[in-house]
Length: 491
Image (cartoon, rainbow, N blue to C red):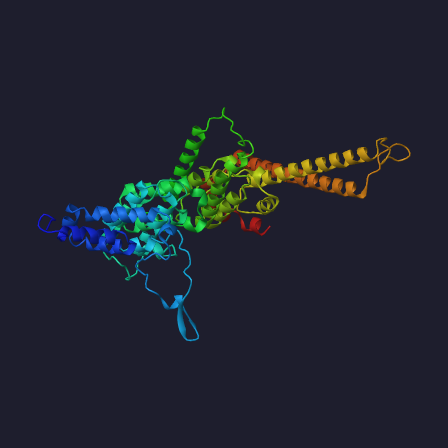
């Protein structure tokens, strides 16, 4: 078979043919697919490695270097690419191909070959975004659960599954998780959460689920509320997986702490002071996301109070500019759990800061009967303080404007030198006095209520009444009536 027995013998002809095959993208794909039937011999002859190197080189190269269109698996001319001019079929101009031109072709490869191809492409320096996009394309083809939109459709997979073997899909998912680049942000958070849901349905290994939870936690600020509504696949009674969201949140704060440690406080880079507010944006976004999640899962009657408190208290106080979202979640929880005790209500309401409620939230909280009385008094007190500050600031600004307009300071004075109050000032002063009267009236009512309760307890203690004595007195009433003369009864 060598040239020793004849010039241009079989080996040289095969080598020239193989070089011609490797020069074409589609032929290289077909040759690599054909190697699966005789994988052992193809490996010995290094045909598989040569095909993979050829495909990796072409995928990383600029497509414009070897011309458009690329001869892929679907390179046959379709009816959409032809047009008729006077009954003559003409070819339309081929559009330039984007960077994802090779994604679909490599999905026809088996998982071991696809994995070797992705590793070869990665070693040649392809961008992580392109590799992640190819892995997402491959996963959506062979994992039908990834294409489900609803949260609860994932729990009941349909019959139209390409690979019905659960073990095969589990192995495929774990391999795909290992192929995703570790760079933050190259894969969308929505895809990672869907991959995590699929891992829960297929009962993937704990290490695989932990990797996905860490990846989701590292970019939790890019998630949406619908993404976090993960159906509960375990033995817990809650409708959604609260523990999984708690673990994801813990991973997010670990990433934030690691980033803070990596940037010492004594090193101030250029533009760091101006971008300080941008560094707080992920924390604020996550706080708003968790508050919305708590409000969404609060109506679940099986949602225990310790889990609610643990998830709500995980967010630091500085991450919430306003506590309106947390107040809404607490109100929804109190509405769905009316049986909790008063101490538990007090403990739950300590999670929010009454000073950080907006005007609308304060107005709603002041009229909310589900809140403890202490919280309502705090809301009214801080609202009055806020109103006083705003009024004092308004008077300060108005005085400065008058002084700047009239340096002599004679405006606003009567002939006798007294201050002449305007109608606006009288209205504001009247409103302030009314608020002070209302607040003092509420305090007086609270004092009377507490005094009445104490006096009633002292009165019953002095008389020595108890439940047993009252029952005995009720039982002894008929005997006492019999002993009284009839005339006395008539009187």
